[in-house]
Length: 138
Image (cartoon, rainbow, N blue to C red; front, top):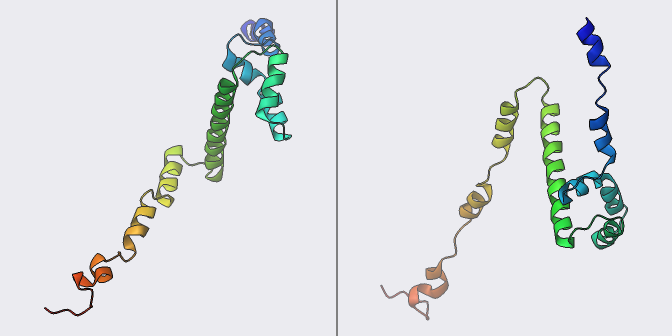
């Protein structure tokens, strides 16, 4: 039982302090400030203004790199939301089964099959089989 008590007293204070410190790497800095960046973008501010403010706050990063990092974070969040949403809609099911159900409802060849099912353009009909008078002699 003394081991359980020692685990409860173990607070990870040094690790907890990292949450308030800015990371060294640019991607880490963007992730660290993501809630503020996302709030500013959702409020209608442009990425250019957000980039300028980040530079003023000491987060020195190229504009194109910032745009790429924001796109990456948004894609990760979208994948996370999709994963959570698909698992929540089928409680108690295995994730592979939900992926199989999603695969059945999505057909990547549907557009191609629809285009191929339409009647084709006939060059022979348009050119009257090469007879400009539209008289078929044969």
